[in-house]
Amino acid sequence: MRLATVLVLGATIITWAANSALSIRFPDRISEYPDVAVDQTLRTAVFALGSFWRSEAAFGCLDGVVRATVGYAGGSKPSPEYRSLGDHAECVQIEYDPRIIRYGQLLDVFWTSHDSRQVFGQGPDVGNQYRSIIFTNGTEESRIAAISKEREQALSKNSVVTTQIQQLGTFFPAEPEHQKFELKRSPFLLQLIGNLPEQELERSSLATKLNGYAAELCPPRMQRQIDAKINDIIRKGWPILREI
Image (cartoon, rainbow, N blue to C red; front, side, top):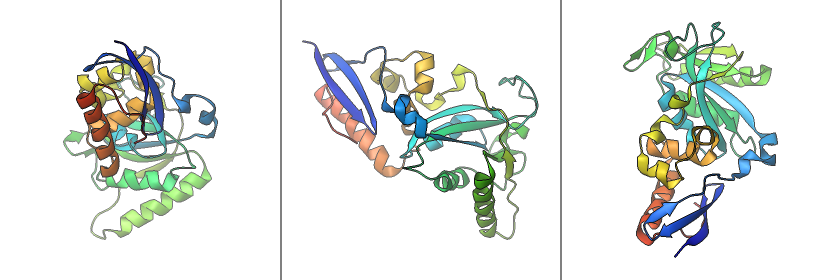
């Protein structure tokens, strides 16, 4: 028997089909609401906070974040590549709906997701490419970023916040193999959303959310909701029409 229904995950609605109770197959193309008219209301934010694999996952599950893309920015090299960055930093570009999440809230996640007082690297990752930077898109973002940095510095008088605030120049998307890195480490989740082609995976809002889930970096409420939805799929063979 071939079943067809609709799975609602977060704000993303996808149509899927199951060939049997435990064999889940999604169509090749997924229609997601942020890829249409809503895109006109989105804004972007770019942050560098160490390895971009983890950085992308840190923002993926936030309410109001539509998608995230890893890449390079902050340097002068015209065509940076992973093995030849020049003076660029690894960073993540976040597309978000300002009606749901504010720029200041993204900055809160930025500060709590890395050590802004560490010089020339993050954790075991050492090098200029892992420096801490807030890239801004105008004077208002620069003002908000400066205030947030002052607050972060006030938390400790014994160390210096090394984060730079820079006007964003060009954001260079990283190579496909670096996009949705945490999600790609979970073959089950990739199969669950239909083993999307690389280009679709990069743009998928659902993949952005599941990338954060795979890294266990979703807010606890969202992590539990996705757990429950996946458990429903495994137990019943098809999802219940329900929002998470």
